[in-house]
Image 1 (tube, rainbow, N blue to C red):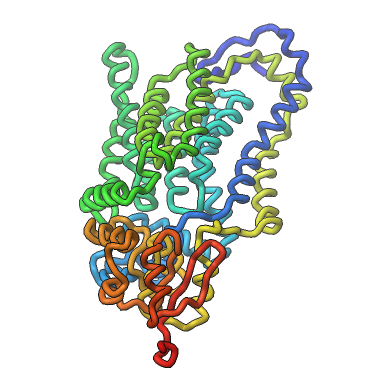
Image 2: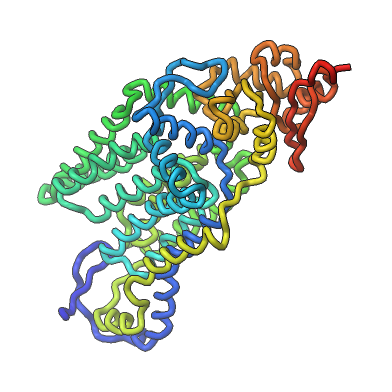
Length: 502
């Protein structure tokens, strides 16, 4: 063996003589075993979580339609008052692929697939850090801390693809490939990313920072290379924003989605300091403080583009919680670099004598993926009205199901095409006036008679406390009867037969 190793920046250093730390081989080796099991532990945590996202249900149904159609769907199939209107193709490739996985492996198969995608972003950039010289323990810490910050956002949904794609992009940046290989790998990744999840603009931000800082470094020192690869990829990322079936209209669609999300009070679009996000803010701030401490302690191990990207994404996270996953991914190389210190050649040889065997991390991940669905089948959050929907299915109802808008997705997945919905979680689908009308119903300003005249519902599926005025009118009405009430207060009303109205 040569006596050379690499630092976390990839620069070779000379091997030093053994130090007193070489005598702690056994202790370090146990730590390396624990570090090797971190990816499997992350997967186990994700697989034990309940499915809570309400939108995955309509996305899966839309994915089934896309698969049957052989491509994106251009006309609205679900919303009763919008049938046949133009339909944006946001995330169409994610919807189709996830529907395909569910068709083959059921919810358990989809849960494993989604978890591997979500974690794949973290693992990809961590692997790149390790290849560039980060220590095993530093990489393990760089996985655990950001995971703690972002895990609350994890559920089966297309955002998992965003995690995978952004992590792969950060891995490409960390590997510092030559321009041609970087471009050859980066351009297809960016195009695929935007069609899986409309967030490639985050990638454009990361590449833009790399390009600007690389250009400034070149201006200060002309012996440094021009950032040709990052510059071309930055342009490709900007172009990828429009490289979907929606084209340039994606800007208006995204703006409307953001506007309606804020108008309706969706917590993930709002800042950390609002009451609804205070619980989420605790791990975010705790991890931010730890990361800041590590960076300040190891000032010689700073990489400006990594720090600037992490700072920009933290500001975005503070103002809109939905960016926390991207910030967590950007923290991985920052923490791995800050915690890595140059080890001597003799220490490295001593550590590997009793270190965890190669392949342990992969074997542990495969074991968890295989055993967890058997030991803990897929569970759904109690906030999902699956019991009420299953009961409604037994009544052979056809037509529009008036449901609280968060329940629209599960209603679509269970009953389309026999069922349509008044509202669902696609904020961009409904105009501001429609959302205001929904608020009027929930606050008792719009009476039951107007709701019936507008949608001619075949059934109501609402939460009594959330939609108290409407639930109260239904309970008093002679034309409607309650046929189901769940322990969470979800009720189902269907029309009474004429003979029952007396």
